[in-house]
Image (cartoon, rainbow, N blue to C red; front, side):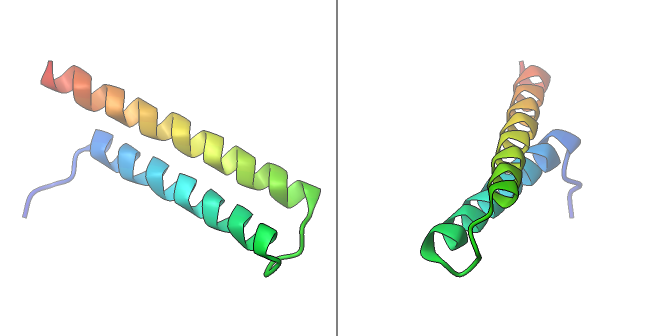
Length: 66
């Protein structure tokens, strides 16, 4: 069994964070979770952080291969 590299873990973590933020925002829109301004900002912040972590991981993978 091979070890997962740190950069690949960053990509997976970033994607998971973005997916969680999407699900949170979707549940607010559908009405399962009560709409709240703080919760909306939290979903946005998690999505943005997930994007940043994922992009950092992708750049790390590209740099190690090149």
